[in-house]
Image (cartoon, rainbow, N blue to C red; front, side):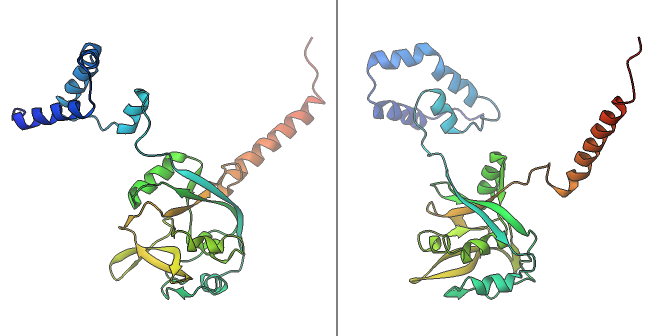
Length: 246
């Protein structure tokens, strides 16, 4: 194993000097053992991938990265017979990408859905957004039809003039590259366009989310719930004809 270099040691001393610690404060750090713990962790084969903000919070310091903000847009509805093309036309965009069609972005969810905008306040890659949304637990990435519902809603359609809104829940491979739909500005107007999934999204972007469906109301769980209700009804009726044994 290659030994630490004198230059690296100088860098450590530089960090200490930048904090303008007194001799007493530096001695407190050394006596606490925290510095030794960090050096011990660094000496392991795989340095822990603990997020820096987690350590800062444990030490009583403010986070370097602010917490994301989530804005609820309310329930928006996708009509039972609506098509992607019809929703695009209803949005009355100054520019709409011609590849946003049923063939590339079919509607997969209909009816009302509660939608949200999340702002991470930092540059993000698509995989990072996906991981962050998965960690929320009660939300999921919105679909193209959700984005189109925002784009034609009288109250929300102007939001895209303020910031780009990205929809990572739907994608299509076009000319060998994966694309996702987004809302944004077109000069002074509004656009519905496609961007690369592999983009690094700027810190002012918002991402469209939807509330995760409840297991109790999803089709796959409706039968077990009904069966339980029927069983409870049977037991109640049976109790009317059975008396306890004395």
